[in-house]
Image (cartoon, rainbow, N blue to C red; front, side, top):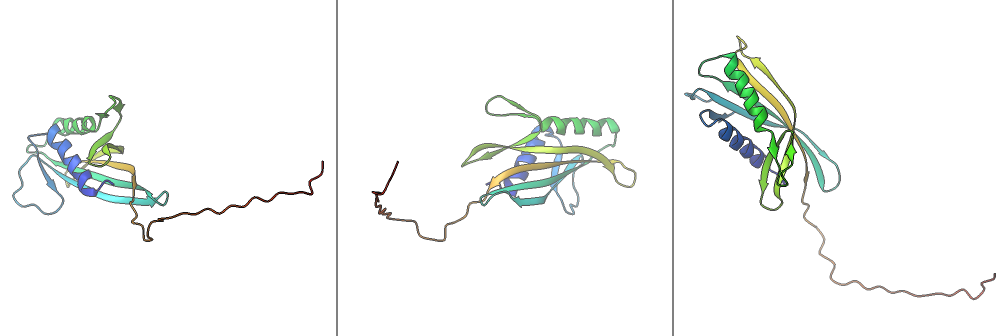
Amino acid sequence: MITEIQLKAALIRLLKSAFPDVAIYGVGAVEGYKKPCFFVEMILTGENDETVNVVKKTYSVSILYEAAKITEMDSLKKVDGIRNMLKCVDDRNRHRKMCIKIKDEKLGNRYVKATEFFYTFVGDDANYLNIHFNMEFYDTEEIEPTEPPIEDVRLIASIETNTNYRD
């Protein structure tokens, strides 16, 4: 099972590797933050049961970029950098279009699909870059058994023959 902490940690790890000189903050009021910086928000927007043990989850990710000096060229470089950051190669050396690699101790590497990538400029002067995308994946929900396990099974069978059979 992938947790929200694993997802956000993987996302922040990717941002740090792609932009080592940019500070990264979570959502909420941050006083005295360092520019340039990213504010990363991740919200669960859908959780639907697919089967008894399988759940489909959808998260919406918003990355707000606040530059030290606002230029369109710098913002567009960040868009390209984040788009490229979401492209990965899996363990079999297959290129995946847009995904985030999650390291899971039980299952090994998982690849969470990134969809609906877009960006806008927000703020009073439309000078802050805001990048959005969704993350979608199927996950298992481990259900603890409530009944004790079966210890012994006995099968009793009898064979009946039909002696009144005709051709």
